[in-house]
Amino acid sequence: MKITWLGQAGLMFETQGKTILVDPYLSDSVAKIEPHNVRRVPVEESFLSLRPDAILCTHDHLDHIDFETLDHYLSHGKCLIFAPAGGYEKLCNRYGPRHNYVVASEGFRWTEDAFTVRGVYAAHSDPNAVGYVLSAEGKHYYITGDTLYHERVFASLPNLPLEAVFLPINGVGNNMNATDASDFALRTGAKFAVPLHFGLFDSLAPETFTHPHRIIPEFYQEIVLK
Image 1 (cartoon, rainbow, N blue to C red):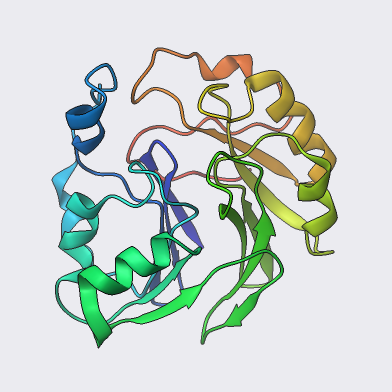
Image 2: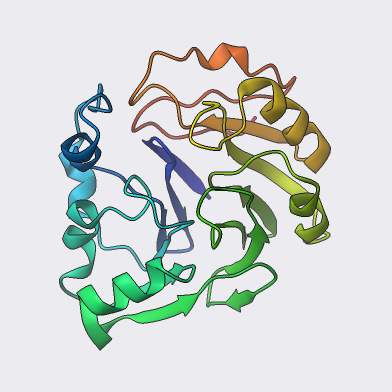
């Protein structure tokens, strides 16, 4: 398994010949609506030529379902797309029937050739938001999506040993701050914790995330879990 941080909440998983993207945001579209949220790190355009086998969208906010980015991936070919209600309808309407769309919700499961995807509750301003547990090569990776620390999240987590949890630490927009995210990560029991949602629109220092087994990612670089 190779895991790469695409910035913000974006991740790329490569496993057994499959490429899986999570919440790719490789544009500056947010700044057109929120000028203070201009991206501070340039887009690495080589990632726009990917041909993903699956895309996982956690919720219907512009830095998570970004059509300027997704047009590069979904205007041709065929892809397996997971998105919760709201985002699901927008994706279907924009890209049509060539792709296979799955409505992601708390508790769902989908098994593909090389991986399995499960849905986890997320407490966010989008009421349909979800997190995902992605399982491949005998390991389980929890991508929380945007969420607060919330008891229902833990109740909805599948009973699986987690290799890593990937979670927001920015503390705005109805997301956990670094303190709550550290406690959240510890409670999941994951071996490693990877902070996300920093450094693109802000100058937040990821070192404020104090989990004892944190892996601080770098833009466009592989996340090595060790």
